Picture (cartoon, one colour):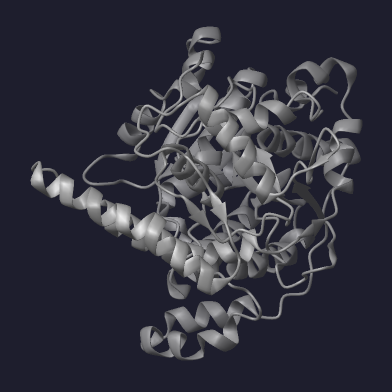
Amino acid sequence: MRIADYFKGKKILITGATGFMGKALVQKILRSCPEVSTIYVVVRPKKGTSPQDRWSQITKLPLFDKLKSEQPNALEKVVAIEGESTADQFGISEENQQELIENINIVYHVAASVRFTEELISAIQLNIKSTYSMLELAKRMKNLHCFVHTSTAYSNVEKVGELVEERVYDSPLDWKVLLKLVEHPNCHELVPAIQPKIMSGHGTTYTLTKRVAESLTEEYSQYFPVVIMRPSLVTATAEDPFPGWLDSHNALSLLSDAIRQGIVRVSNADKNKSLQFITLDLSIKAFLIATWNVHRKGMKSGVDVYCTNMGDDLDGIRLTWGNLARYGLDICEEYPSERQMWYPLCVQVRNPILLNILFFFLQVVPAVLGDAVAFATGRKPQFFNLTAKFYKALTGSLREFSGTNYHFSLVNYRNLDEILLPEDRKTFSLDQSKYRRRATQAQRSGDDEVHPP
């Protein structure tokens, strides 16, 4: 059975549909599986804007242009329902819950906080409590075929130097205990006091809570088939629906954009360490193939884990943080940013003393001068604050990812491409050979919105 045929008539629930990966998932399903029945998207009302109006605004993005051109009525299949990921029962009304329980076949739980600097209490609520609420709802669904949970390749960051396999590792923390902690009346005093012990070798609350959420999700695999997707650092689209689409910044894209604009000139990334990334379109294709694979294998329970990652080489050349900077600077010459403020350069240094010296002269001094000019011309000074935030990221969350070699098993992920039917290859192929050059070029998409060429 072809992938599009499997999705024919299916009713799908997607959380996090307003986020970077969520909306890409919606458009890919509608465009490549045109006979899907309904996609329910959980949307939080924001600043007086209803979920329906928020979703309507999102569909005006260039990401959806190809879909609207090919299938003008496809977006009518999307139903926006109100929800809040940190609320009990995901903030979904009883009436809407009942509709989902009766109808949903596939759940894609994409909602999460991806901020590395998120406070631990918030991270637990956003990444663990939300997962628990959605799993409980899924447990009540009468026709559920598959529950797909979005995690991260870095959920096991403490395994430095080891091969991280595509399986769920035992969590050092009990998710039930963490949920009780954040519900405690004195949680804002209690949690920070014990946070060093809770972190368990994780440098960010993001990776820790994603690790625990994986363990939580696996527990529910006794009730229905579970798929856990572990994307590495997700970059702009390389091809599908068009090259270079990116509307939100993660650590990698933010760093690339800042280098391209000349804002960032000093980095503490280890130029010899491997860089792990995946383009958005490859990752989304893997989501759909993995879902179809549950049906292909006849799974009734259990868990499949896939690390969606392009590996650490480009056409046989090892991809490192140093190579990324060189590739990025080459692209800057070919595709200069309209917002360039300084001639692009990137000095990479790990020595903390040398880093601070270079950072002062190449970052702080220009920032102060830039703010002085802005103030004198009646504009709002912003460079020093941006520089301070970047320094905090350099010495904090980014250091964990840019100074360590991680080794991820990709056996399950690569097998997804091998099991594709010939008639599905044009639409869902995970062949990376055509993506590799485009993946680096796509980093030129640093402007707020990229339009098709």
